[in-house]
Length: 302
Image (tube, rainbow, N blue to C red; front, top):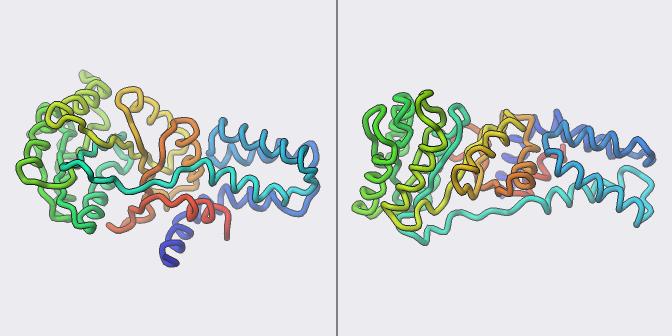
């Protein structure tokens, strides 16, 4: 467990050094005055926690100063850390109560979506689950090739179709194949960007709808992969996907490469989505179940 805490701490170095370290330094031995909350607000916005989270934290800090008679900035440290901790959910692994459990993964090209699917397959395989991949991003030949590479690397079966074929059809075939193979988990890769004559969100909706026809109740989980390095831009992407399908979780990819880890708070506060997994590095085992305690400690503690 200690090693895992260290991995979280190390992966959050950029977020800690560039943004939250400045917030930690701000909570030094200084008097609270009129400028305190303006400075704190600016630092929180720069840390990508989002405007809603920022205003909520400022209100609670001001309330604490008034009600508890706080006079020193270091007295606000525990309050801000606890409020940020409370904001996040502690996720659990999928229950796998359905067989197969169908997980649809969305995200724009370049977000780390296909890599995350590969690492999910490896993770679930280590848990003793039978996994099947479905390449429903049929509009990019490179996407199919990339997922096939991951399937071979992790040694799991994959259902594909020809370039430019119907993503709904390959989704249907993939789930039916999973049923016949008696596998535990189906991971569906979806399109991140389509040719101009197609509507991305309509295709995502179709994949979602067809999955339900192939297996009532599917997809059981719909997650979006967000590139941690893009900060607030990733939230705007997630908004568009959320309008198309009923997303119920997010995967933060490339967290170890980002100074914008504070977006985890904005994802929960603004999008109402829990962060399920986070990418802490390039190794197969570096996709980890999100741990809110390790995360909050990692962004503040040097």
